Length: 130
Image 1 (tube, rainbow, N blue to C red):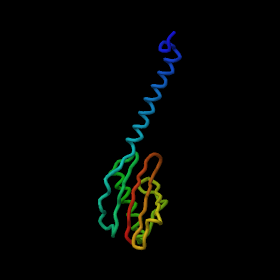
Image 2 (cartoon, rainbow, N blue to C red):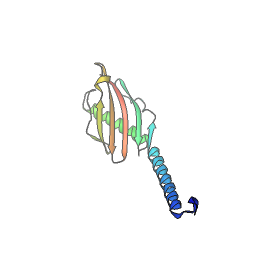
Image 3 (cartoon, rainbow, N blue to C red):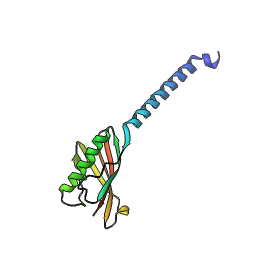
Image 4 (cartoon, helix red, strand yellow):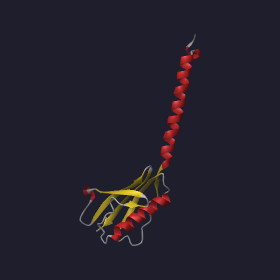
């Protein structure tokens, strides 16, 4: 019996092909769920600063922008440009903020905000002049 006609070999080959197809389909769907969006436009009243690098997972870009603006408005309600809404829930997503001390100077700081709930995630970066 040749190797090609061996039932065990054919079963192994078929199983390997199925696993390969399933793995490719899974990888493609997870890549499609996460995407970069255009940077949110300068929000009126931003008071010296800008938003950049918006990335969403299992959310639309327009919903991501709404989260960015809602997070900004939460910060501004605290009456300080240096305020943070770290740990708050914004539009159903729990947000955490990281400010890299190596990227901060007395007149400005840069922050990365990650807001998530389950598989939904919105990540943005902002720079705020103080």
